[in-house]
Length: 474
Ligand code: 6PG
Image (cartoon, rainbow, N blue to C red; front, side, top):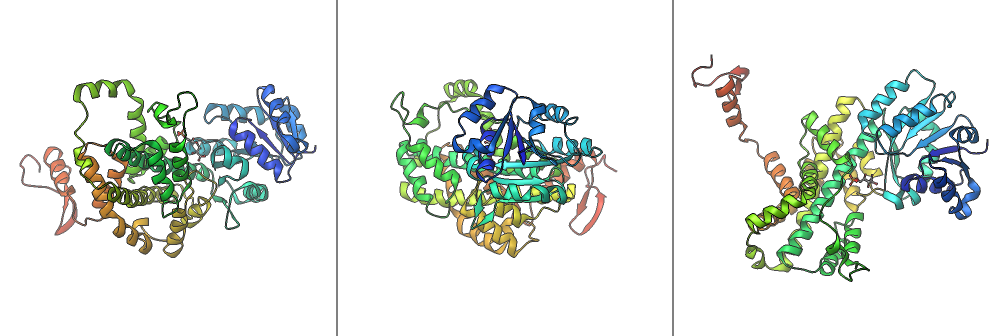
């Protein structure tokens, strides 16, 4: 057998990952259920075809790889992964490594680890971020599995990953589901970033009636400052593009109904299960769900009309644009702080020992949320590894102090004008609640005790189960 590695599933991500692997000097066997896809892939591989072994049957595929075989599976998350594992199990030999590189739910990954643990097969659950371009030229790679398993594929994985200042954006983050969990939180943060950007776009479009190209210029400028990031960069490009068919700005021709495949929702579900707030991600997932209710929204607009947005027109546009830049940064701080807090919680719960500086570092290049900002997060966690929350690290506390006024102004102004800013507002609400030593849950406790004798602790006596003078409660 001539191939050092194999890959199953030649969809967009799989095909590009295979080309990336071949380009780094590895011979790779490829297989796809639909043979035509395998042939097309091979025919279009150009010079790289000499390092690609196209296989038409799964048996040929296995035969083409030198044992112990690393086999990357890049099929649709969910049942197709289990089906693929079932097919492969009898064919793979001692010490072969099966790497699920799709967007798996980490709970499925944990279950797969459990099912395969008594076989001679080694399993790795690997999160890969970066879309088509990343897969082809260097994604960010988040690995879950044993040290031994990782050691056997580390060289090839680091060679295909993105590099930040020469450092590979690839790491083993923990055992079993750790890689897929971290990828899920990455995607949750991606949702929050995208939603906050969309909210800012909404303020400029609906509050100031700016044209897409003008708005694009604002993002282009921001991309040279503290918001410098892939998502801001592509937003500027998207807003500058015209539709070939109508000649209109492309964004104006796209239906305002967002898709979602589940990772954002899983991030929220897991954060809720652990009792760690991730309000930015929640707001972003909810906004996508609400966006999908297009017909309902159309009927509601007929019923209620749109709010008067004169509040916005009275504002100095340039000043608001400056405030928006700061507000977006403040909103990001909130969403990332939450995402990292959720990962810290999961690390404790699942015994992963996740290393926050490493996660921030491997997100600095290759992935969808790559940014200058992540380099700042990496150094903040490096300096204060035990911080309870990103926003209390000295570096970020300063940034919050600098930007929270702008966030407050933006949320207040947009809200007065009836422009929805749920994710930005979530960051503000989170910060305002987090920074307040005496909150309002004393009243919640009193209510719980009143209707259900649930008991409370007193400020002058922290014993559990004390009751108020409401009668009926003993
Ligand atoms: C990435 C992306 C990638 C994919 C998401 C999008 O990191 O490369 O997150 O994994 O684009 O699955 O998810 P939605 O379809 O749910 O937006």
